[in-house]
Length: 252
Image (cartoon, rainbow, N blue to C red):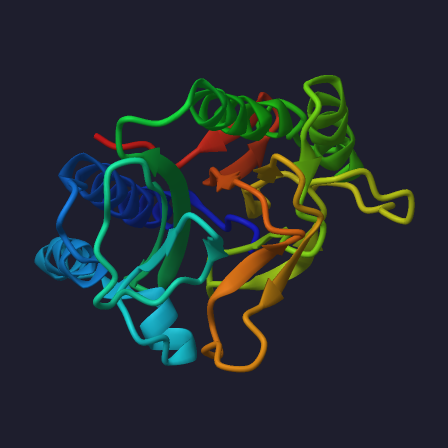
């Protein structure tokens, strides 16, 4: 999606604020002993209160309002009976639609106590995302995002999940410019046009290289790192401008 005017931008900002506030509230509500279904119910109520529809349900028939992935799960976890415990690493991905526009955001949260290494991974996951966002601007190369995040990961001795990418968003949850690598990709030649709307969402890991399904006995949604390793994801929806990235998924 490329922003066509001020009205469209304001509608995008509105749904961006809604998903950001929902994510923040869900993160603050996490506590040991609750189930991921109970956490998802909080998100559903907040989205419905704002007149927004869950994008995973609307677009893909996902069995939950939000994606909640715990520990060994890294993406697309189905909310259910799993009980959140002290020491867990919980990723929440919130995407929704209102007035014909979509926004997408996500973050990883710890349930104390956790190790210093996991705290550092979460801190650096956010830093990796912002490293990518700082490469965004009209007429800049899309490859700059993955190159910068890749250098950050290399310098700090992390790996990146290389088959879960950023993507265009706006008129639908996933749209052109299609997959945008958050790792170095020598084949990427596209240029960011002014007003382009997309996500920046690196998956930073302590050893994982790829996302894979659970194999026999797994569901059709939940993804795990291969090899298994602690992994975090942080995500914003942004608009490319002449002055850099305008982040629309900030709470407020």
